[in-house]
Length: 576
Image 1 (tube, rainbow, N blue to C red):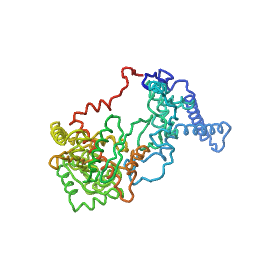
Image 2: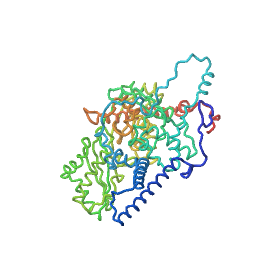
Image 3: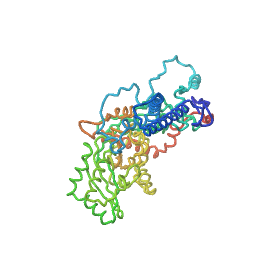
Image 4: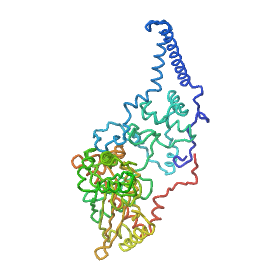
């Protein structure tokens, strides 16, 4: 493993090469076995004693010394066994979230805005800034200091933790139950991490553990954590969009991406800025139901699409949330199966849970009039979520946004280092014709997913929804007698939210705050999420403009070799 540019030997030690077994000489195991034996022994003794009393007609309240001792032993062993083995079950009855997947959260309905009292932001380490040092004369000396900087090590486990680690390795304590058993999420992550290293024989040195609020992800963001990863966040901009300035946070490990997007922002700003328009705002969910015949499936389709029934269906749907409002229902028949694509507004939430709860209400309601309807699944992939799909490309999903700008000819030559004619020709042959030759579905662009992924990671969006959110067609046209360039991006399915999910984590919340869209907008519900979607489209516009210019000018390889390649001597790096 490399540290400071030099090979570094592994520092993690493993207690045994063999995985410990439950039968090893473990004090905890022996104690448990002893109490088990005591419990069942006294139960047997008392039952035998009471049976004898029944046979001899002796009153039950007449007890001797041996029965008193047996009763006390029974109570003591029962309390011990309940405390050790039953506490997780008892806690689950009162502390665990509801098993109803639709009651897990109501996205925006359950958000309570309050000041965060945590000392350190989630995903960030405490301030460990290096004190000022005297100037170093030689760069070689500075590199030597960096090379000799010690690695941050995880402290060895205590004796108490060691017993729990052994129990996890042996399988007597499930890894997933550590948080509920210990009541300390940080300690649970540390113990799980050490147990994993012993079981696999692989080191997790280099994966940070300290400096993260594990309480903030319990039951909502990540299960069974063993650490967290660090992704650098760069800032592109400012981007002038609809008369406002935005500094766009981008979390990425791809060199040149932020620099390229920043150059696009500069070209847009010098030309007067970009404008955006929101065409549609609605999240979708499409259950699949089955009947005994195609005729019955068609009857439900006609019922759902009949305008006379819309009022009733919308009332049933809307009672699930004060923000979720049904917009449309479109149906498709496949044999005797029916797919119903519900679309609804979701406020500032991305809204998957919200629309799913509304759909469940409608499905339950429909079974009163269609008792022969068999609900196969609440999602039938006609939605369509986290998959490239023509229905999203055509109908839209989430926010449908168009963003445009007019780049002046002199800016194209001075900032982008190319010319209008070259950009227009390249866009036609690459983004349009080339994508058509490849059979692209929503991919008529240069690299929209690059920017979408980076902004999504920085702002706590669902990174898997980058798939449909990156649907984009980039258009370029020469205007004003060929002097200037009109460039636009049309993105029909940007799926974003500013409440719920990863947006509540401290680091991601800070990036949303930088954009001015943190949390829910109480005065105009949904406006924060719509603004974020416009920023995503504007950032994609800047990224498309810069990359296309680099390709047209023949600078792509040169720029990546400059910004996306390390100067370190990789031949000296050895694996740990």
